[in-house]
Length: 448
Image 1: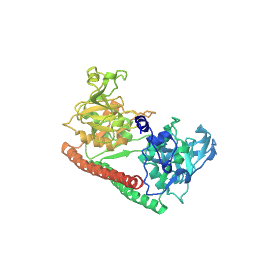
Image 2: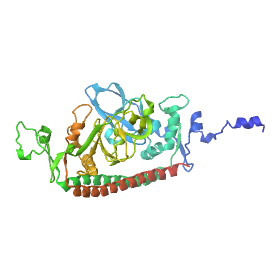
Image 3: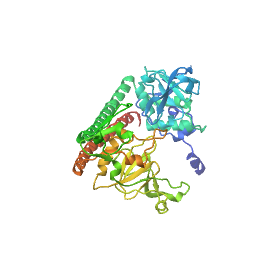
Image 4: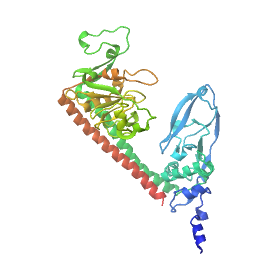
């Protein structure tokens, strides 16, 4: 064979006709999907039949609308609206047990089965709903196959393909062949998967119960109670019972405890709200100083990670607020108002949605304050502005009533809660491991 022919062969690849599941060149070149040959292969279109039950939206009726979470997050209720508030008047009705995918987000794993409570819901033409031939395929088996990383990679090739469209190509999707064991084997695979998922779910419930017990333990340790009084035209309060504030918040959201209750501001040494340096100045970003936003505050006590970072120049030019180790960062603006965390680094910064404050550590333990704020959000954000964008500013943070036992009791409570939280983390870790193992076991059976 000549040198020219050898060079040409580098650009030629062959595919057995029996393995030619899709005629798309990009799919054949890029797809890493490699199903096991232990089971017979079948086109998806052989057991899925498109269902197009059209619905004309009526103004005086209420409709459930569907959305699909990406990465195998499931099919869930988007919202319920009357027809007059739905712009697209021609939609499609879905039924429980149908397989559904999003044309736009199929490449991100947005597929699943319509649950019973969404029977009769509606979707736009951007969703594809199919009746499943259950004599051939267990619906959950289909979902497991279709939400594996390998299958999602295939959907990405379908979406981009030769036409460079963002929506999945339905014909290509239905033409892919997948392994279809006997129903008995499918049921066994699903059962094995569900065993580990059931264990994982049980562990999550246990962790949630412990989390609920923490709030109960905190309250019982200091006798904390919140007394929400009914609104009355005239009410009387004894002068001896007014310890800190005279306003309606103090009377309508009154709390009681075995220990003294004071405004949080009594223990704050310094308080400031973050700011964002001018984004046009690139030299202020991508340094090594953590820059916290609300999404970085996830419920963990100590803050250790941030998506963004600032440079020292942003600090030197006084374009950013700085906070120090032991300070508490409080989300004061937005839908997640009330989230808190304790700074772990010697120096960090935050955006304008976050207020940070330094505590007098001789009088109050930062970890005690964290647990109080974390487990009592309804109380600590009760003064938020009743607007589209909830706000708890510096003054309102300072006015949060907090019950304060002596330091020895604070430390004892923190120690006990730490143990309970460690147990939660342990349960969550094992739960995640079970979910990962369940998927690995399944994929081992259907992929090479």
